[in-house]
Amino acid sequence: MKIMVIGSGGREHTIAWKAAQSPRVSEVIAVPGSAGMSNVARCEALDVSDHDALVALAKREHVGLTIVGPEVPLLQGLVDRFQREGLKVFGPTQAAAQLEGSKDHAKRLMARYNIPTGAYQTFDDLDAARAYVREQGAPIVIKADGLAAGKGVVVAFEESEALAALDAIMGDRVFGDAGNRVVIEEYLDGEELSLMALVNGRTVVPLVTAQDHKRVGERDTGPNTGGMGAYSPVPQFSDADVDVAVRTILEPMADAMCKEGTPFTGVLYAGLMMTATGPRVIEFNVRFGDPETQVVLPRMESDLVDVIEQLLDGKKPDVEWSAQPVVGVVMASTGYPGKPQTGATIKGISKAADQALVFHAGTDFQQDHWVTAGGRVLLVAGKGDTLQDACDHAYHALDLIESDGLFYRKDIGHRALKQLTR
Image (cartoon, rainbow, N blue to C red; front, side):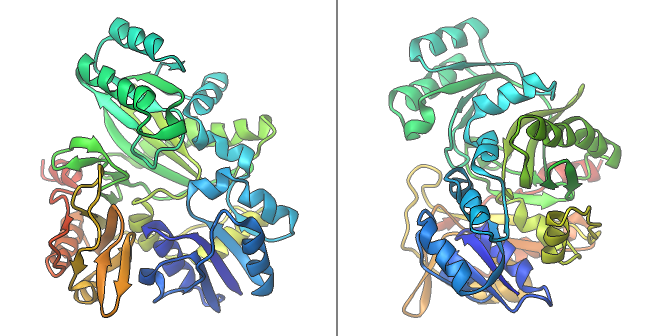
């Protein structure tokens, strides 16, 4: 069968890489894909918002399954269109995708179904939002209600920082229409956990845990990004901790979506804060996380295509996992997450790929060399018998990549490594 993967980033490169390993797959087609994905997929440079063209391609190529990577096509109703055309697709409908499309919508659902999360208020008036921040004080969390590519969240430890965030989001409109409304949340104290599950209706199949590193700077300093690296598993949390999160958050949300008349099919991602009183939801996403996918799928020993097809057929697949940890480090363009400077030459990618997994997120191949072409450019993932081994492999491979236009954090996995050395 042929598989189609929608998207062009590091997450989609990883999905295509994993799907291509299936003995049942004759070809992976990536739309639009990227030069970095061409080693595992045939890339078709179509606009992912052109649903007619995507449907025509899927029919012409007799695609057996389409996996939608990014959130924007989901919110534009691509899955709905494929379903109407009788095409097999893995991802939520437009209505179900609102769980990520509006943080206020997600919060209302969680309140309605008693899913644990932080207290919040939603505002569409800047003055009212500023008054609320002054009333609540800091620390406090400011979120653009709509999609902001993982960057629309400010964790403010000073009142002035929260007010500045409101001015930027609602006044200066740095995230455009995504900032028409803001959700202001209580600050939750604890450690973050990314928990994804493959879902079809009320069937929930949890994946292994991961932890993302959102802040741009080492020791978790500086502004939030789309993610500077991740690792899996997360040894700070036991299987019992994860079971509680599945029982109190993932399964109730899947059930809630059915009750709301918008049953969920696809990847349900819960960004959790593991507090002293149990897991609480920071955010829901409706697709594979990025960069978590790049450290979770390399640990999957089952055939991803088989697993998804079994789920779509109404079964609950058993998924087998490697016990070996994976650590992934993002290489980002200078200036990221503000104004990334692109066009810098990159050398040594093939050398690094001989030592570790290298997933392309924002690269282009010009004449005979790679150049930076986005904010997050590459993710280098190492695997090992221990988390430290995986870390060492990733950073050794990173040392083989040369570019004046790239930087990366040197402390990915630091929380787990600190825990393991206690």
